[in-house]
Length: 28
Image 1 (tube, rainbow, N blue to C red):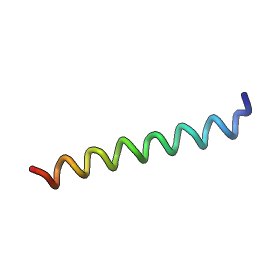
Image 2: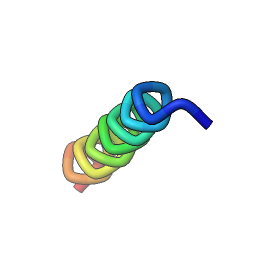
Image 3: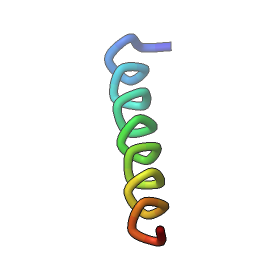
């Protein structure tokens, strides 16, 4: 697998996790 593609995928996954946390905090 291409290293650049792997890095991009990892970064996108981290952003998704951060969004989930933000949505949870907004819900209370």
